[in-house]
Amino acid sequence: MPLNLILRLINGLVTLYFAPSLYRTYRNTQRRFYLYWGLGYLFYGINIIIRLFTPEGIEISLGGMIAFFFVMLGFVFMVVGVGELIDKTKLMLASTLIIFLPALQYVFGTE
Image 1: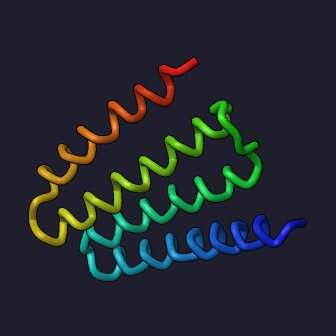
Image 2 (image 1 turned 180 degrees about the horizontal axis):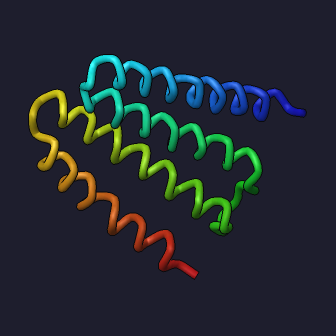
Image 3 (image 1 turned 90 degrees about the vertical axis):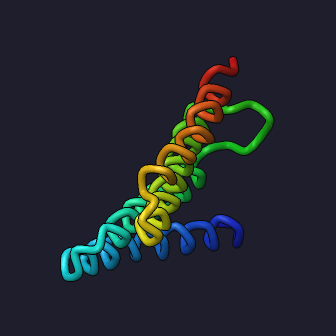
């Protein structure tokens, strides 16, 4: 197994490790920031693990599309978590969806 794949696997596992910790912190504090960031870390970690098994190249494979969906979902949750900290959750959600939906349409709309 090449070093690159080993380091990606470690990156994915460390990212996934933080998701339950953030959820436990949310349960103790009831601050939604931790819930949003926990979900963001979960989806981003899934993205990293999926990318281990997808071929890299010009063409977008089904695995690449799924990985893209998870990375964008993780991004949305992390940005919404920041919005929760500054009391602008709805604004941050709307602004990330403005970015997310056209990007999603572009990736899934290509043949």
